[in-house]
Amino acid sequence: MNDTPRIRTVVSCTVLAVTLTAGATACAGSDGHPLSAKPYDAAEQISFNAPAQGKKADPDKALEITAKGDEGRITDVTAVDATGHHLAGELTADGQRWRSTGSLTAGGRYTVKVATENEGGAPGTRTFTFETAPAERALVVKFGPEAGTYGVGQPITADLSLPVKGKAARAVVERALKVRSTPSVEGAWHWVDDEKLHFRPKEYWPTGTKITVTGNLAGVKVGDKLYGGESKPLNLTIGDRVEAIADAGSHHMTVRRNGEVINTIPVTTGKPGFSTRNGIKVVLGKEYFVRMRSTTVGIAAGSSESYDLPVYYATRVTWSGEYVHAAPWSAGSHGVANVSHGCVGMSTGNAAWFYKTVRPGDIVQTINSYGDTMDTFGNGFGDWNLSWDKWRQGSALLGDAKSPTAPADIARLRPSI
Image 1 (cartoon, rainbow, N blue to C red):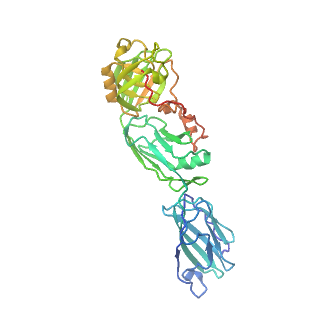
Image 2 (image 1 turned 45 degrees about the vertical axis):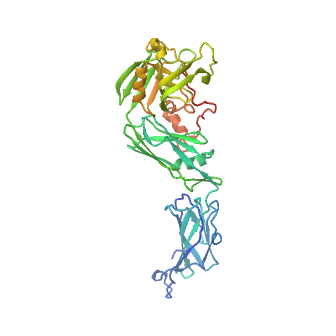
């Protein structure tokens, strides 16, 4: 027979945990013909770098199996964890040593089957199990938003419990974060910073889409002494396609549902010096009542621009305080002029209708304003203002992993009228 041992390299995953147990088989036949004999117990023919009884293996160390002496050789090794993932490894040409090449999973349990043959060609076998120690540092992922029904513009967020900086480590994390939808869509993760990712499709989510988000990082080696932890899955449903376009030039807002115009509302937007941000925003939430004070946005009390007003039917589109809301004090300017401090104002009746019509994840777009473009990250969801090509560049798997970082000084809950 061929004296060259078979080299087996199996797809790697994550593994961890070492606890030894042994399984044996019957002795070989005495006729010297291995094909007609039952495999013998190879326990005395091989050694395994397992920890002492009752201890668990260090997942950062490779698994090694060695043939003892010159009386036989290893012909094959298969190592599988409790989830069915195979540990990649390599057998030397002389069959004397097998060493894992893939990373072990932390807190895992492996079953290892070793095949051997003796000098006469008789087959031997031995089965071990071992466990790996749990990770000292676990990277936990929290998905957002909360389970429920959202508009077609809702991004999926993944908040990491620890920073991940290197491209290789980011690729491990990103590969483990799965977004499955019905119908299926083309989409990608984008690294906002070292501790946050956003996922969005190339185009808005189709109406009625069912989404499931899972993190398969448990036990997976991410970086030096860093392994993934358990993540709670997320289920979302996408509702009707509701889009509101506020035209600062015409002073009107057009609202569409599934492509059909359902309302046109006279509005006022930000006046010079306080121009409403241009671009696509996503509804973040709704507040029936908000007390809006100019001091929260840096306008000194007592100045000609100061205000302190009770505001009703407030639909939030930025964390810094931009809303669509009732503005009865500027009724004479609705549909005529821009007089607000950055929000989109309208009559109380129209604001109540808008408040009841939209949900988080719906689109609110401002056009023809003198304001800057909505930030991509850090002040709400400006994700859709980034082209698809640039969005993909923020993926560790699809692009160069470079992306804008979220501004650190954005103040949350700052209402402006």
